Image 1 (cartoon, rainbow, N blue to C red):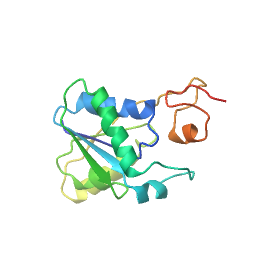
Image 2: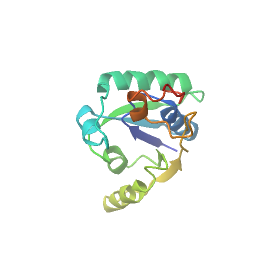
Image 3: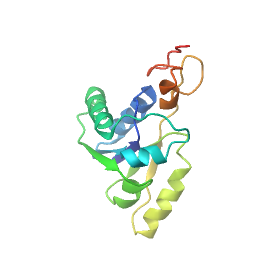
Image 4: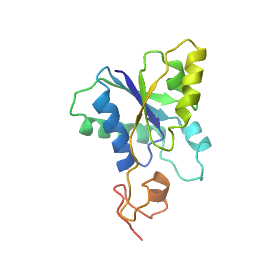
Length: 155
């Protein structure tokens, strides 16, 4: 199965690592990791915050995937320039790794795929990873200085 996962991935944290691990585990036909381009990364923030450059985020993702890949998967990194981009444009993808937060978007993605004559994607839901305080780990919380990348409380 060819699996895709997409995100801004900056700063990286254990929630992202969970997404990558799911993609690598199930992606025996290859893994496509789409890193949000700089412009889209700013546009899609619910709360404005500093975001590392695409180059920095891509380098961090590459290093993290190499550290996590115990299956020796073929991994392809791409830049995501539009909200659904690769998921709706790439017929060879079979599944999308998603979080509970993004799971509802799979229906819209599959509708667009059907309109293009592509098979719908299966969803592989990676559960949230929680910080020591019981709240979900997020890049925004890390940037605010509430937690570190592993969810340890800093305040």
